Length: 395
Image (cartoon, rainbow, N blue to C red; front, side, top):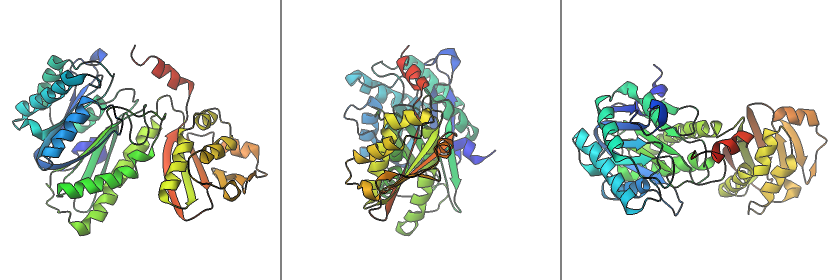
């Protein structure tokens, strides 16, 4: 089997399972368990929303106390356990404790994730039963089921893996809506058999997320539950010191970027995957800020859905991005069609520009003409189906 299909179990020493415990209707998979055979260094990044779900608060607290001996992650779908107050935090702790009891480890060695509807309590009897069921089904092949169990409005699972010469990194993610930097209604668990200290792992994760999960946007909404966790169990015995950290960070970024692009491709109701490249910026942060403004524009996204090569909306979004851009130095392309240059539209072929945005993959490049820095952001179009999906999310 292609190791990428196992995702979180591609690296040595990891097993997983995805089971149905009754949270979703129709016996769909709704609880995932990922377990390492040995202790892991752990690191996490979380939503910057000031309203944070109980699992986010619990994981931040747990990683602050124990970054060197994590053993497992348990995740549920259908219920976000957000805006549930102290009882919700008690449920998150109980979820970890149930997994720890079943696996024979300490509660502070288990991290928890939840995704779904905000404001409802976890059905803890089902959660406990699901954890026991999942623990009995743990296997290397279980990574595929685990990726399906965390899906909400996703139409397909999202998994990735990369084999380096001496270690492997694998992961899974979910996310299709409420996606916006910084991160989104997005959960991701990444595992590696590299041997790396928690502080180095944390640095690598922050660098990787900044170039991947923080470069996607579906709808400009930020969730209460966004979490990316990475666990490193050292099973390959390949230690990542300062000299090796750069290569490890690049490999981690590659896996994160693959997962991030899969999220953008599976945006709720999306018909197009859109890559926005901004070049010629003074600073990379400027380029990313302009690209995000374009990616988040409902007018740009609906124009793309309608195959309308409305270049004016792209230029306008760049103009209100907050970056000091100069229209007289800008050049804009839809695909390979240059539609705007030096402050005015070019004499472009309208049919060619329409063809450039009519396929499933759309590439937009804006050169600001101000410097040498660049950034890429990935997004999707905004369709009628997005409104339908979110208009009926709770019902």
